[in-house]
Length: 201
Image: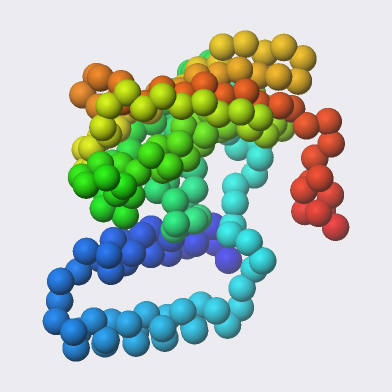
């Protein structure tokens, strides 16, 4: 199975999810669409893997070596997540995304939990790009202003300090140059990676 085919299917699924969440067609059309979606689910479910496809751990580090000219895609195989194209510049990273109605919390605003998810993705992927197999120890957020839907969000992150197994980094969300969210995370490098053995067994 080609990874690019899986990524295209995930992108199509995101389009379907948005259409399903915002549609206003007649009830008979809703029922017909539901039946077609059930048929597709049955077709795809005939052969499955235990987990969603994911990229190699080392890919962000290779993208970081190339520099900001290359955007590394995060979550391209998982339709539940809004994918990010992260660019690395040394110990910093950046990305742009446009959240739609699927990520709404307060009216016309991005859900705070989804913003926390974005911050953890930016920070975690940046630390991953240094080659350190780490997990989030703490993640502290400050919500400075409402983050609107359907507009470009500029995401940034940078590593502040690495001491022993600990890496401290900060991230932020900006809309039209004004910050709406700031985050600070502590990441702990694992001495043993339990899922590595599971992946090779």
